Amino acid sequence: MSKHQAIIPVILSGGSGTRLWPLSRKMYPKQFIPLRQQRSLFQDTIKRVMALADGIQAPIVVCNEEHRFMAAEQLRLEAVLDAEIILEPAGRNTAPAIALAAYCAQQRDPQAIMLVLPADHVMHDQAAFAQAIATAMRCAEQDFMVTFGVTPTRPETGYGYIQAGAAMFQEQAYRVAKFVEKPALEVAQEYLESGLYAWNSGMFMFKAASYIEQLQQHQPDIAQFTLAAYQAQHRDLDFIRIDPHPFKQCQSESIDYAVMEKTSQAMLVPLNCHWSDVGSWHALWESLELDDNNNASSGDVILQDCEGCMVHSSHRLVTAIGLRDIVIAETSDALLITPRSEAQKVKSLTQTLQATQREEANTHLKVYRPWGEYESVDHAERFQVKRITVKPGERLSLQKHHHRAEHWIVVNGTARVTCGDKEFLLAENESTYIPIGEVHRLENPGKIPLELIEVQSGSYLGEDDIERFEDKYGR
Image 1 (tube, rainbow, N blue to C red):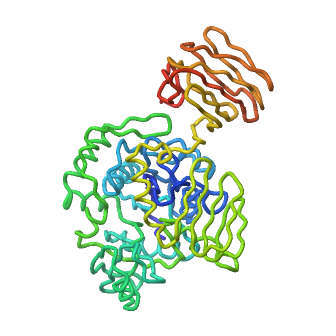
Image 2: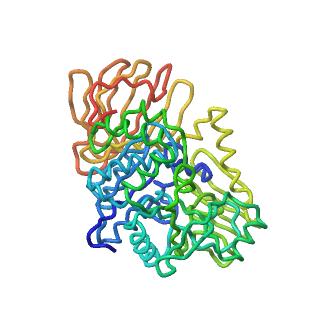
Image 3: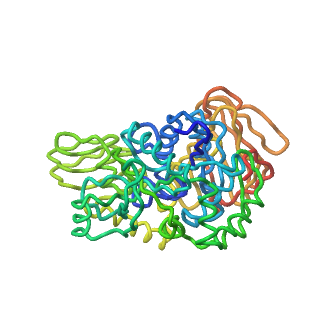
């Protein structure tokens, strides 16, 4: 890699991963879930780019408001403490998101080169990835706009394709001849046999200045609105909040449509690293280690006389007998069963759930917060029981509720409770009562996680019945 220009990784983390429902949901999408091992795809992406070492600067992460604390926490787990996290006030696809990152990168270094990566991809060959980055760096230094094309291994109808043109850089990179939409199976087979096409990976490298210049030329409205939004930013804890008003005026456009298909500077760098975008249960099955019968499983699963199945269990024993090429995905509040061949249709199922206002489309029974997590254990018309965990040293907001009272029972650790004008400690097996309308707060002053059971009772138990008076997380 060049010794005089640094790479700034840009991690795009705005997706919702609806095709991996019920595991992936709007408020807890696939990039933050440990799908394959104990680490999330987001963590794997951070680790992958930071392992490039030479010339790698702190990353810029672009994510939405709801996921900001998950992104910050997983960066901390990877010991990346100096990342910049830009919050999108609305989803506008990749072209505006990358523009925000480009303005941020230029503030650091006017000659910055950005390596743009989705947060939810799998790669198995770090050396091949590093080699492709080195080639792309040489292209980007000469103001080319690099797109990484994955060497296809099968006729795939779920990906877009890129046709390679004239070879350059000692035949390690190619001019882009054209971008192609997702093809029919017979066309995908022709692409595979020709050797001239690569899968469109959605990964890019270019100078921040080059991207802004091309965006101004081909999509001036997006360039204008994103610049206005970024210039009006303000810092909120570890986050960069942009002005939502100009940003929401941006049309929703991918970088491919906005820039890469129009620019004369597009360059294709091949990438052969056993890549997957984990875009469906079928794709996840392909990325996992299979048993002798081509089954992939995670969680508490027992299979008998099954072949080619993908089975995930989150909360209970899942068993299956005599199944072929079936997906079973179990969570505490939902169950999906589908042929693997139909796995792409899960997205339309989630759209149905959204249209019918099913909460299962958005959240799990376990919900993550910056201070810890809570999980709904039981509920009825006028009561709800939750299991709450507060991380050491963290505290909830100072708040009150207008429609519910709460009973707290500590089962592990120590709680510091504020209730009205009183402040006191609760130890294990001790409890307290928070009346309706009383200002209160829960804190964990200890060194171990605080676990308690909360019993809510009242006429309305929604999470929006919270009036906050003070909150360290700026909510």
